[in-house]
Amino acid sequence: MKKIYNLFFLFLAISLSAQNLEKIAKEITDEGTTLYRSEMASWYGTDVFLANYQNRENIGGYFSYIDEGVPKCIFFSKANQVIGTIAFPTNYKPENAKIDLTERSFTNTENEYATIRTTALHRIKTDTIFKFYKNTDLNLVPIIKDKSKKVYVLTAPKENNTVLFGNDYLIDFNKKNEITKVQRLHKSLISQKIVDEEVGKTVSGIHSHILEDWPYMTPTDICTLMLYQNLTNWESYNVVNKKYFSIWNSKTNS
Image (cartoon, rainbow, N blue to C red; front, side):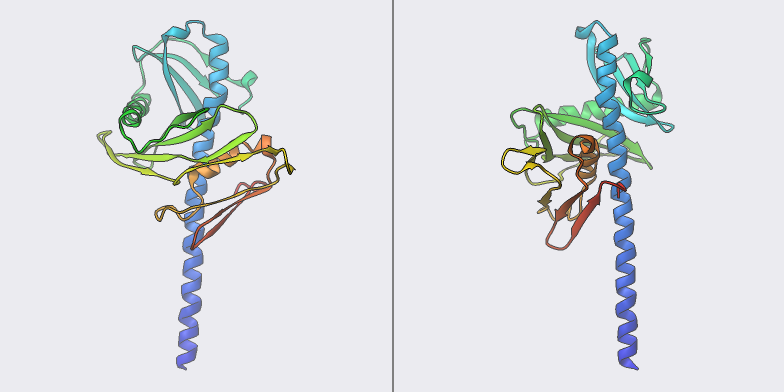
Protein backbone atom coordinates (compact mmCIF):
# COMPACT_ATOMS: atom_id res chain seq x y z
CA MET A 1 0.00 0.00 0.00
CA LYS A 2 2.86 2.39 0.83
CA LYS A 3 4.32 1.88 -2.65
CA ILE A 4 0.96 2.71 -4.20
CA TYR A 5 0.76 5.95 -2.21
CA ASN A 6 4.33 6.86 -3.23
CA LEU A 7 3.52 6.26 -6.90
CA PHE A 8 0.33 8.30 -6.60
CA PHE A 9 2.16 11.30 -5.16
CA LEU A 10 4.94 10.94 -7.75
CA PHE A 11 2.45 11.04 -10.63
CA LEU A 12 0.61 13.93 -8.96
CA ALA A 13 3.86 15.89 -8.66
CA ILE A 14 4.71 15.24 -12.32
CA SER A 15 1.22 16.32 -13.41
CA LEU A 16 1.33 19.54 -11.38
CA SER A 17 4.83 20.31 -12.67
CA ALA A 18 3.69 19.84 -16.27
CA GLN A 19 0.66 22.09 -15.71
CA ASN A 20 2.89 24.74 -14.14
CA LEU A 21 5.32 24.64 -17.09
CA GLU A 22 2.43 24.94 -19.55
CA LYS A 23 1.20 28.01 -17.67
CA ILE A 24 4.68 29.56 -17.73
CA ALA A 25 5.06 28.76 -21.43
CA LYS A 26 1.73 30.46 -22.22
CA GLU A 27 2.65 33.58 -20.21
CA ILE A 28 6.02 33.86 -21.97
CA THR A 29 4.44 33.29 -25.39
CA ASP A 30 1.73 35.90 -24.76
CA GLU A 31 4.32 38.46 -23.64
CA GLY A 32 6.59 37.68 -26.58
CA THR A 33 3.68 38.05 -29.00
CA THR A 34 2.79 41.43 -27.48
CA LEU A 35 6.41 42.56 -27.94
CA TYR A 36 6.35 41.33 -31.52
CA ARG A 37 3.15 43.19 -32.39
CA SER A 38 4.57 46.40 -30.91
CA GLU A 39 7.89 46.06 -32.73
CA MET A 40 6.18 45.28 -36.04
CA ALA A 41 4.17 48.49 -35.66
CA SER A 42 7.43 50.35 -35.03
CA TRP A 43 9.22 48.73 -37.98
CA TYR A 44 6.57 49.49 -40.57
CA GLY A 45 5.20 52.57 -38.85
CA THR A 46 8.60 54.26 -39.12
CA ASP A 47 8.78 53.59 -42.87
CA VAL A 48 5.26 54.92 -43.45
CA PHE A 49 5.74 58.00 -41.28
CA LEU A 50 9.09 59.03 -42.78
CA ALA A 51 7.65 58.64 -46.27
CA ASN A 52 4.88 61.12 -45.41
CA TYR A 53 6.47 63.56 -42.94
CA GLN A 54 8.94 66.13 -44.19
CA ASN A 55 10.16 68.02 -41.11
CA ARG A 56 12.69 65.46 -39.84
CA GLU A 57 14.31 67.93 -37.42
CA ASN A 58 11.02 68.18 -35.51
CA ILE A 59 10.94 64.45 -34.62
CA GLY A 60 11.60 63.78 -30.95
CA GLY A 61 10.96 60.03 -30.84
CA TYR A 62 8.36 57.31 -31.15
CA PHE A 63 6.76 54.36 -29.36
CA SER A 64 4.22 51.72 -30.26
CA TYR A 65 1.39 50.11 -28.31
CA ILE A 66 -1.74 48.05 -28.83
CA ASP A 67 -4.86 50.25 -28.66
CA GLU A 68 -7.98 48.08 -28.25
CA GLY A 69 -6.42 45.38 -30.40
CA VAL A 70 -4.98 47.75 -33.01
CA PRO A 71 -1.17 48.20 -33.18
CA LYS A 72 -0.27 51.90 -33.37
CA CYS A 73 3.02 53.72 -33.74
CA ILE A 74 3.06 57.21 -32.21
CA PHE A 75 5.59 59.84 -33.28
CA PHE A 76 6.12 62.90 -31.14
CA SER A 77 7.96 66.18 -31.50
CA LYS A 78 10.77 67.57 -29.38
CA ALA A 79 8.05 69.65 -27.71
CA ASN A 80 6.26 66.40 -26.71
CA GLN A 81 3.35 66.85 -29.09
CA VAL A 82 2.05 63.95 -31.19
CA ILE A 83 2.92 64.64 -34.84
CA GLY A 84 1.97 61.31 -36.38
CA THR A 85 -0.19 58.27 -35.66
CA ILE A 86 0.30 55.21 -37.86
CA ALA A 87 -2.24 52.45 -37.20
CA PHE A 88 -2.41 48.90 -38.56
CA PRO A 89 -6.05 47.79 -38.11
CA THR A 90 -5.92 44.85 -40.56
CA ASN A 91 -2.29 43.85 -41.16
CA TYR A 92 1.23 45.28 -41.22
CA LYS A 93 1.26 46.06 -44.94
CA PRO A 94 2.25 49.75 -45.31
CA GLU A 95 -0.34 50.29 -48.05
CA ASN A 96 -3.11 49.36 -45.59
CA ALA A 97 -1.88 51.58 -42.74
CA LYS A 98 -4.05 54.43 -41.44
CA ILE A 99 -2.03 57.65 -41.44
CA ASP A 100 -2.89 60.65 -39.27
CA LEU A 101 -0.38 63.53 -39.26
CA THR A 102 -2.55 65.81 -37.12
CA GLU A 103 -0.54 67.54 -34.39
CA ARG A 104 -2.16 67.04 -30.99
CA SER A 105 -1.51 66.32 -27.32
CA PHE A 106 -0.97 62.83 -25.95
CA THR A 107 -4.03 60.95 -24.78
CA ASN A 108 -3.89 59.79 -21.15
CA THR A 109 -2.81 56.31 -22.26
CA GLU A 110 -0.20 57.65 -24.65
CA ASN A 111 1.16 59.92 -21.94
CA GLU A 112 1.73 56.86 -19.72
CA TYR A 113 3.67 55.13 -22.49
CA ALA A 114 5.66 58.27 -23.31
CA THR A 115 6.53 58.81 -19.65
CA ILE A 116 7.93 55.34 -18.96
CA ARG A 117 9.76 55.34 -22.30
CA THR A 118 11.43 58.67 -21.50
CA THR A 119 12.32 57.51 -17.98
CA ALA A 120 13.77 54.27 -19.36
CA LEU A 121 15.80 56.14 -21.97
CA HIS A 122 17.32 58.34 -19.27
CA ARG A 123 18.19 55.25 -17.22
CA ILE A 124 19.85 53.62 -20.23
CA LYS A 125 22.09 56.65 -20.66
CA THR A 126 23.13 56.74 -17.01
CA ASP A 127 23.25 53.09 -15.82
CA THR A 128 26.35 51.04 -16.65
CA ILE A 129 24.35 47.80 -16.69
CA PHE A 130 23.40 48.66 -20.28
CA LYS A 131 25.93 47.65 -22.90
CA PHE A 132 26.35 49.10 -26.38
CA TYR A 133 27.75 47.18 -29.33
CA LYS A 134 29.06 48.32 -32.68
CA ASN A 135 26.59 48.26 -35.59
CA THR A 136 23.59 47.86 -33.28
CA ASP A 137 20.81 49.98 -31.81
CA LEU A 138 18.88 49.64 -28.56
CA ASN A 139 15.12 49.55 -29.15
CA LEU A 140 12.75 50.48 -26.33
CA VAL A 141 9.42 48.66 -26.16
CA PRO A 142 7.03 49.95 -23.46
CA ILE A 143 4.32 47.53 -22.35
CA ILE A 144 1.38 48.41 -20.09
CA LYS A 145 -1.14 45.69 -19.28
CA ASP A 146 -2.71 43.86 -16.35
CA LYS A 147 -1.78 46.75 -14.05
CA SER A 148 1.94 46.29 -14.78
CA LYS A 149 4.23 48.78 -16.48
CA LYS A 150 7.53 47.81 -18.04
CA VAL A 151 9.96 48.68 -20.80
CA TYR A 152 11.86 45.98 -22.66
CA VAL A 153 15.14 46.96 -24.26
CA LEU A 154 16.22 44.90 -27.29
CA THR A 155 19.41 45.04 -29.31
CA ALA A 156 18.73 45.37 -33.04
CA PRO A 157 21.34 44.85 -35.79
CA LYS A 158 22.23 47.53 -38.32
CA GLU A 159 23.65 44.90 -40.66
CA ASN A 160 21.71 42.53 -42.89
CA ASN A 161 21.90 38.73 -42.64
CA THR A 162 22.13 38.87 -38.84
CA VAL A 163 19.74 37.87 -36.06
CA LEU A 164 20.67 39.05 -32.57
CA PHE A 165 19.62 37.53 -29.26
CA GLY A 166 20.66 38.84 -25.88
CA ASN A 167 21.97 42.17 -24.61
CA ASP A 168 18.34 42.76 -23.67
CA TYR A 169 16.88 44.17 -20.51
CA LEU A 170 13.65 44.56 -18.56
CA ILE A 171 12.82 47.75 -16.65
CA ASP A 172 9.88 47.53 -14.23
CA PHE A 173 7.84 50.52 -13.02
CA ASN A 174 5.39 51.18 -10.20
CA LYS A 175 2.05 53.01 -10.42
CA LYS A 176 3.85 56.35 -10.10
CA ASN A 177 5.96 55.55 -13.17
CA GLU A 178 9.06 55.18 -11.03
CA ILE A 179 11.61 52.49 -11.84
CA THR A 180 11.54 49.64 -9.34
CA LYS A 181 13.86 47.11 -10.99
CA VAL A 182 16.34 46.83 -13.85
CA GLN A 183 17.55 43.39 -14.96
CA ARG A 184 19.43 41.73 -17.77
CA LEU A 185 17.64 38.91 -19.60
CA HIS A 186 20.80 37.40 -21.14
CA LYS A 187 24.39 37.55 -20.00
CA SER A 188 25.79 38.47 -23.41
CA LEU A 189 24.98 39.25 -27.05
CA ILE A 190 24.40 36.24 -29.32
CA SER A 191 24.71 36.70 -33.08
CA GLN A 192 23.54 34.21 -35.71
CA LYS A 193 23.82 34.51 -39.47
CA ILE A 194 20.80 33.79 -41.62
CA VAL A 195 23.07 32.58 -44.41
CA ASP A 196 26.44 31.24 -43.27
CA GLU A 197 29.34 31.25 -45.74
CA GLU A 198 30.40 27.77 -44.66
CA VAL A 199 27.08 25.95 -44.23
CA GLY A 200 24.74 27.98 -46.42
CA LYS A 201 21.25 28.98 -45.24
CA THR A 202 20.72 28.12 -41.58
CA VAL A 203 17.66 26.07 -40.62
CA SER A 204 17.56 26.57 -36.85
CA GLY A 205 19.63 27.72 -33.91
CA ILE A 206 20.36 27.36 -30.23
CA HIS A 207 21.75 29.41 -27.38
CA SER A 208 22.09 28.92 -23.64
CA HIS A 209 20.65 30.80 -20.67
CA ILE A 210 22.99 31.22 -17.72
CA LEU A 211 21.16 33.78 -15.58
CA GLU A 212 19.24 32.06 -12.78
CA ASP A 213 16.17 34.29 -13.04
CA TRP A 214 15.67 33.44 -16.73
CA PRO A 215 15.93 29.66 -17.21
CA TYR A 216 13.34 29.55 -19.99
CA MET A 217 13.11 31.08 -23.43
CA THR A 218 12.43 34.79 -22.85
CA PRO A 219 9.68 36.97 -24.35
CA THR A 220 12.44 38.86 -26.17
CA ASP A 221 13.67 35.59 -27.73
CA ILE A 222 10.16 34.91 -29.02
CA CYS A 223 9.75 38.47 -30.28
CA THR A 224 13.03 38.23 -32.21
CA LEU A 225 12.12 34.85 -33.70
CA MET A 226 8.74 36.12 -34.89
CA LEU A 227 10.20 39.36 -36.28
CA TYR A 228 12.78 37.58 -38.43
CA GLN A 229 10.75 34.49 -39.37
CA ASN A 230 10.05 35.75 -42.90
CA LEU A 231 13.79 36.15 -43.45
CA THR A 232 15.04 32.98 -41.74
CA ASN A 233 12.22 30.49 -42.36
CA TRP A 234 13.52 28.58 -39.32
CA GLU A 235 11.15 25.78 -38.41
CA SER A 236 12.26 25.79 -34.77
CA TYR A 237 14.69 27.31 -32.30
CA ASN A 238 16.08 26.03 -29.00
CA VAL A 239 17.16 27.55 -25.70
CA VAL A 240 19.00 25.40 -23.19
CA ASN A 241 19.46 25.93 -19.46
CA LYS A 242 20.94 23.59 -16.85
CA LYS A 243 17.39 22.67 -15.78
CA TYR A 244 15.20 23.30 -18.82
CA PHE A 245 15.17 22.95 -22.60
CA SER A 246 12.85 25.33 -24.47
CA ILE A 247 11.77 24.63 -28.05
CA TRP A 248 10.04 27.28 -30.19
CA ASN A 249 7.86 25.97 -33.02
CA SER A 250 7.71 28.60 -35.75
CA LYS A 251 4.87 26.89 -37.61
CA THR A 252 2.49 27.13 -34.65
CA ASN A 253 4.10 30.11 -32.86
CA SER A 254 4.20 28.14 -29.63
